[in-house]
Image 1 (cartoon, rainbow, N blue to C red):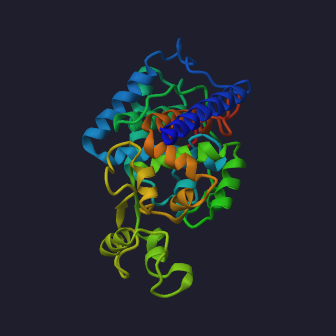
Image 2: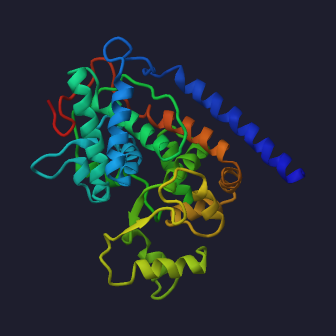
Image 3: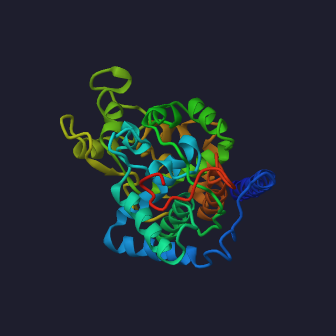
Length: 330
């Protein structure tokens, strides 16, 4: 009984923390949910249909969530990650972004085209990406949460700024925490956002060092990993395999947005070292245990964290532009 009482207390404390942090941040926000009430009242329904139609073609549509994160975390939620140019030096061309799924980009492009057909020149690509990310989440069983709107699209997109502005799979827990705090996101929100790894895929390249040459020692394996998981990964990612071979982030329910990610961390089955460190660290382990035991708690925390993520570096008012085509500047 005491164990469950403690978990209930943690859940209550989490609710207080995230609600207070959300309200504090909201006072300075320039976004609101009904921004297009008059100018494009059906925008969310239009985007939702585009996302659902894309899901009928491929489950890779879930990668729209990751696309949204990579957009917001670089230089704010401004759809600059969508830009494509002949020089190949836009954000999407950076080595760290080459693994972003083409179907995620296509989802946003299709949604933008559908929105433009009804509301030309009104809704930004940044807002469409934000809505599409939420809809990709809920279409796979995840939480439904309000999306704040009124973002405008950015005017720059440079590959050179990407690497230093992204967390990396081999970063230690302190580096990851510092990274998120630098973007005004809390440790709890970091743990919640990491739960997006419950869907989608990565590639063999980021895990080679953990299963073959841990800490640059030939044949060494990361001791925090479940031995059976190591064997599974070695079968999928043998030493000489193409490093771009895709592997599921969640090996149990890869197409369902649920709390399996946290259960896997407890079992030593985190794909990245930065994932597994969430359970190894005494600072973040209580949140991992809570989310593993209580999916409702995870869904609530994730919803709040996504809203906060969507406020990073936004451009509003006369800043930026409303792109007619998400892949190019006007």
